[in-house]
Structures are given as structure tokens and as C-alpha cells.
Length: 190
Image (cartoon, rainbow, N blue to C red; front, side):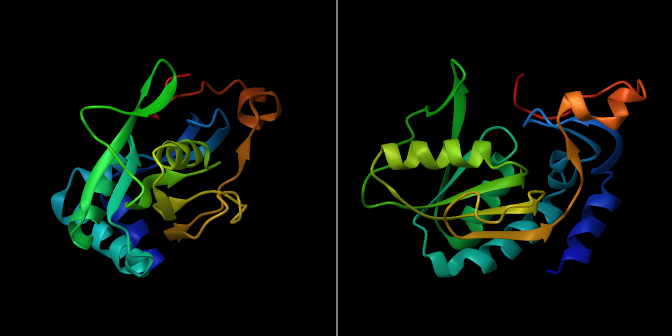
């Protein structure tokens, strides 16, 4: 699946939004990719999951680990396509943790899967959780990589789309300067 096909799925499902958005990273942008809208369609989720699995199979993961909430659906689809279990971390007291009886150990080879990566903060936090259990993180994957620094994760990264969308610190945001109201559509609390 090439980049144009992926973006067509986002457009078809209304998941490519334009306006003034506060991203989960705290940065502002004039475009937002609401992955939940594309992933609500099983055939789209399946296609995206298989495409990411094809790009990450060589990493030989034994488990897919995703941050809640945005990574859960695509993580499940990638895990299904790879034939491995899929689990997730979630925030508790502001920190990502494994809950619900999920566990990892030193025999696990972890692939971290996200919907959209911008700064990589959630991905790095998820990697730290896996490493805290002694698991080996073999790589990361996302439907969309909005970041400009491919080395920010310090491990192999695969994305179906690399999309350069300008982001701004709130104090430098031209949309804020114009008085355009900001919307926070992401899943991470402020």
C-alpha cells in the first residue's frame, strides 16, 4: 500500500481534518489526522494493519505493544496480521503502564505500533515500559509519521506515510496570533 492509497483512505473516511489543532504533543498545527475515523471501518483497518505488518515482519516481533488510546486498533490489526499477541499501555497517574493483566518478559521481542507519531513522546514512553520488563524492542511502526527527525526513536521505524505538516509551539503559532480558536482532538489529556 503506497502513501497515496493510505491518504485516500483518510480522505474517504473524513479523517484528514483542516483547522487549528492542539496535538497530543502540545504543538499546534493546521491539519490533524483523526485515525479513529479511518480505523472505524474494518476493511480500512485490516488493509492498514496488513500493510504495516508487511513492513515490519523482518523485525520478528513476538508481541505488538501500543499506547492507548490511538494505537489500540491499529496495534490489534498489526498483531493479527503478524500472528502475534497485541497488548497496550495506558496512562495511570500520568504515566504509561501495563495494566489489565498484560505482562512482558525478557523473551519478548516487541514492536511498538502507533496510529500517528509526531514528536515520538508516547512511542518513547511505550518503549521504556517494555524495556522496564526486560523485553527487547525491535522497532516501531505507525500509519503516519508527522515528525521531521527519523532518528528520534533510536531504533528502526516504519511508517506507511511520512507527512511533513508544520507544527508550532503555542507561543509561536500563527493561527493563535490570528485568534483562530484551537481544538484538541487527540487522546492524551493535557
